[in-house]
Length: 371
Image (cartoon, rainbow, N blue to C red; front, side):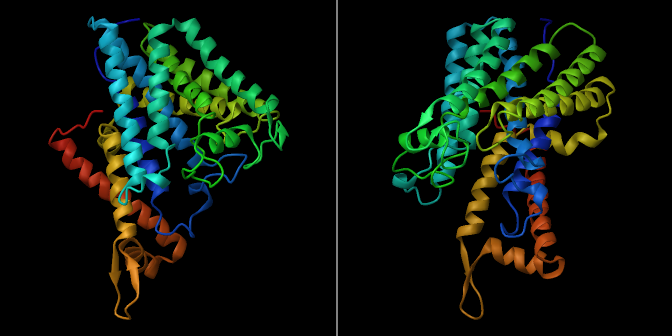
């Protein structure tokens, strides 16, 4: 592996685009009025929104390959690296719990699984696997996790349901979530899309990113790197749809076909950005993405906190009715002239641009919150 001397610009761009997408889909003006591409698929299948989270996990994997390789190159001891990995994992996990608990902090109803929690766990396991295994071991582990998960979901019987059932309330992942998190809130009531068992293939998503990071840090030419990513990504897309025949593409279950498909799409997307930004140096368009990408976790966390505050703080109207600040802004500044659907979309876009403004201030003052 050649020495890594600088950040991968295209990775920061990719990360920034993904975080902007997260903020967009998480903050509509009204959850009743959302255009279909900005919704998750109800069950099987996918929408553009279903690409955002796996893309971010893929990016985490590429970052692992770069950051840990740098630490190894400069001679950091493994116990020091493991301590840093564990510290970052705990911070991410507890930030996720804080988001779920805020502002009431009712721990008896706290939802334990979540987006940041899944990122934390996947980061931990993928980092350790990267440090402990060579490339061949990484490849075998990646596909091994996908095969093991596939077999478990198809073969292991669920009490009262049977084996191989993949409906929302009647699958092995949902059964385990109910068993382990009994008494705690689950996102979907009886199951959780960031639950325990489906974290196994999610680690596979990160490992695909790790393998991509190793490929990008190799000594081959930029052209070959780009072509390799495009070819690998195209293969992943095709293979994902073939796997879909037997194990449906499903974000909620994070099925193995979903992992392979989204990793393929992420590879293609990164290849295009890499060729444009890192190879050809065409970067004028990417500044907003860099602004988000350099403070990705910070802006995700802070935007989530503000969103929660806007939803719970009420104002009293002239007729004495109370309405949240969020709904008041949506109705008066967006839906009133753009209609319910466009107003909901423009609210979300405005929220993205609001945080772009805040993060631009951070960027210009060189405030980069590292976790």
